[in-house]
Length: 357
Ligand SMILES: [Zn+2]
Image (cartoon, rainbow, N blue to C red; front, side, top):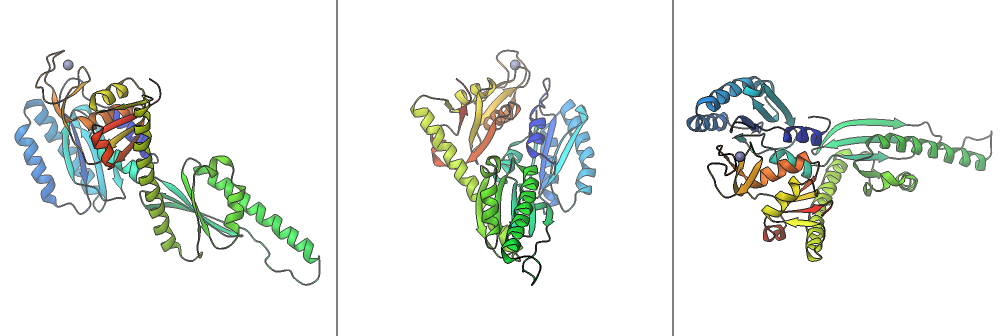
C-alpha cells in the first residue's frame, strides 16, 4: 500500500495512450477470487482484441502472472501495459470487486472510491502517563507509536509539601501531553479520534492547536485495555463521518445551483468544468455507469456511441463516461466524493463544486 493513495491515483490518471485504444489492462483481484474469474476474462478479451492490441494484451498478462503469484493472499490492483513498459500495482486491505478491464487508460474508479470511503485517520489512546497513537488506513492499523512518562501518582511521605507535589505532578502531565501533541502533528492532515479513561484526554483536547482541533472527530471515554472494541468503534465513527460528508456535498451542490453559484451538474457541464480545471470537488453517483466514447488522440469525451472521432477520424473507444470525467478530475487535483444520495441521480449522476466560474 503506497504511503499516499491519492498520489498513486493521481499518477495513474496522467496515463493514457494517445494513439491506440485498449492498451492498458487494469485488474482488481480479491484474495478469494476464483481462478476461473481471470481465465474467463482473459478468454473474453482475447476473443475480441486483434493485432497489436491482442499482442500487447497477451504480453501484459504474462507480465502480471508473477505479480499475482507473489501477492497470493492479498487483495490486489494491477495496472499494466507491456507495450509501454508499464507495470504498477498495490495491495489493498479492503475487499474489492474482481475486475479485468482493457481500456486506453488505467481504470481508476474502484481505487478512487476506496480512497474516498476509507479515509486514513489517527486514533489516540491516552491517559496521564501513557499514550498510543494508531495510524489507521483502509480500516486497519498501519502502525502504532507508544509514548510514556514516569509520573508520580502518590505523594510519598516527607520531603516536599502536598501542594508542591501537586504542582510538580501537574507540570509533568502537561509536559507529557505536549509531547503527545507534538507526535500527533506528524499526521496533522488526518482526522483524529481521542480516547481514554478520565481527565487526561480532556486536558489534551483543551491543549490542541487549531490545526489539530479542526481535524478532531470525537472524544471517546473508554477503558484503556479495550483496544479492539475501541478500534471498531472509531472505524465506525469515521465511516459515519464520511457518509455525512458526502450528504453535505450534495446539499452544498444544490445550494450553489439554486443561486447560480459555483456549481456544474450533468455530464456535459461537469465534463467541461473538469477539463477547464475549475473543479474543486467532483461528486459522482456511486454505482452508476453511463455509456460514452473517447477519442484519446483529441482527448474528446462524449455521451452515447460514436465509432470514429468527428474531428480526427480515428477510431474511438467505448467508455464509462463517469470514469473518464473522474480521470480528468484526478489530473487536476480535484477532490472526489462518491455518493448514493438520490438527488445526484436527478442532477444527471454527476456534479461539481467549482473553484471559479
Ligand atoms: Zn479525435
